[in-house]
Length: 68
Image (cartoon, rainbow, N blue to C red; front, side, top):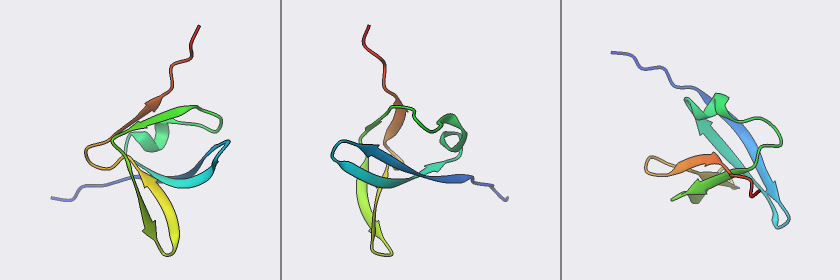
C-alpha cells in the first residue's frame, strides 16, 4: 500500500530571529505568509548544517489566538 505525503518548507520569524520549518500533510496547506503560529511539544534539529524546527509526530502546530 502506497501512502502519499506532502511537505511545504517555510521560515518562521520573530524579534529573536528566524528558523526553517517543514509542514507535513494537512499542515502544508493550513498556513500562509504572515500567520502567527504556536508550536506545542516541538523540537529543533540540524539537517545539512541548517537548524530546523518541527512539530514532530507528537507535537502540534496551530494558530495563535489573538487577545481581544
